[in-house]
Image: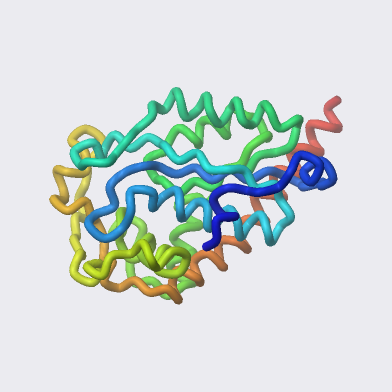
Length: 241
């Protein structure tokens, strides 16, 4: 993954000459991802997917929001969180500054729950992607052996995507980092540290670059449905005027 996937390099005239159907905003986090993945894992994954979606569908690529709601990871060093109120405000302000251009949020962190309400309140100006069902479908399409629930953090999926997009950032100990914690009923109250010492919940030993590439390819295709919904909402609002 080259630097373009993190920071777009277009000039103002270049952007002015384009007519994208939407802008795409990667949203991630800065939080622990076990001993083998970087703190920026969620942001890197969101950026890798957002870049592929932008290239495939001709969208305006925005720089990422690299902080999210990571309070359940506060027990580990390096984790930095912002409040749900702040994340909602940031995304809303960005959307408001796009001169009516719809906004596709590419979310890489499952703890950013507030984004669903942000999209809901936008009344058709935003879409949130990928949803849990799309992540699950991507796992099946890419041949992963775990589910979202079994493999929720620093596991097979996230390690696979980084083995494809940024293999230089994946520690060799991922093959020995597996940890199962299928029952996490009180994670919101107790934090993730109640269920794992390492910060891993999943099976990174099963990861591969080929799986990571297949996950991104599948999801890039699935983005079309969200873009169609944004276009439908835009047309509906235009007719209402």
